[in-house]
Amino acid sequence: MDALAGLLEGPRARGAFMIRACFEPPWSIRIEDRAPLTVMLMIRGESWIAPDGGEPVRLRAGDLAIARGPDPYTCGDDPATPPGAVILPGQVCTYPDGRSMRGTMDLGVRTWGERLDGSMVMLIGTYPMRGEVSGRLLDALPPLLTLTSDVWECPLTPLLTEEIVRDEPGQEVVLDRLLDLLVIAALRAWFSRPEAAAPAWYAALADPVVGRVLRVLQDDPAHPWTVASLATKAGVSRAALARRFSELVGEPPMTYLTGWRLALAADRLRDTGDTLDAIARQVGYGSAFALSSAFKRVYGVSPQEHRTRAA
Image 1 (tube, one colour):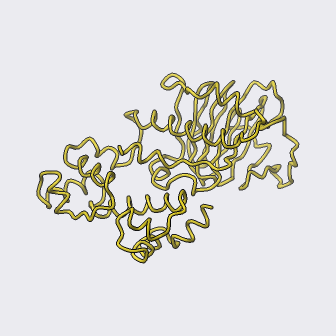
Image 2: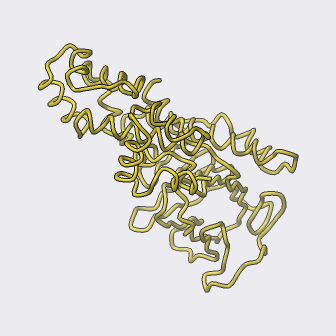
Image 3: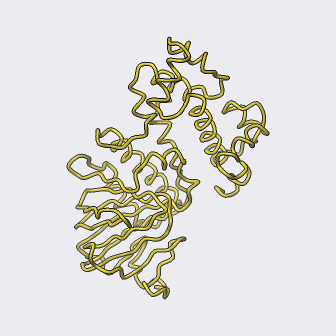
């Protein structure tokens, strides 16, 4: 598995919130849903996204933005337009004074806003639960990233535009998979750009020594690796590997391996029904007890609690 594939295999939407928003200026929506990841794809017109404490970003037709939660932000026709609605956890929609909007802005199947013929149309996809996106992916992203239409053309726009308003059996599953594909395609394009703030380990893949070690660890995390055995694979001394790896990745090889093993365990607890013993063997721990101890130390919850929350 290459590093990018390992990073991007995390998104697994399950009943994700997807909607087509249609507005006519002036309009503004305050987002406080604490969702871990939200994708906004501009279909028509333009809008501004203003993160709290950050610079507003302008989106035009064809542009895409990904917001990493849980920090709030505001979307509107202008950063100065006061919000007319607030989106809370669970996609509960209220007026700014807290009164429920009670579906007053529903415009049809997965369509929301003020008017269907509004000059602004945006497709929005939200992963409501952190368990649907791997922590390694979230940690690698800035609070807000954008891809403009002049550097990337979304291949899924026509299909998403058609499917988001369909009301067919199994449609939620279709939209979940399309959202996953949209996120993966967008992030693959974003990580390929020189200005992308990719994680240190991602940039280190280009190094002839550290890159080889990273690929070995990602391909076979269950192997009983040591710094000495990794140094042999890389053709350098233990001291040289430890120094070079720490300089480029920001942590020692064994610390990176522990994080990678636990990230894999977290995803498998979420995505499979395998026993803890089986998962421990798959990711390189000698027993369920050893995995459970390491998992709780890093994640703050037991593997079973993580699985229950993800479910």
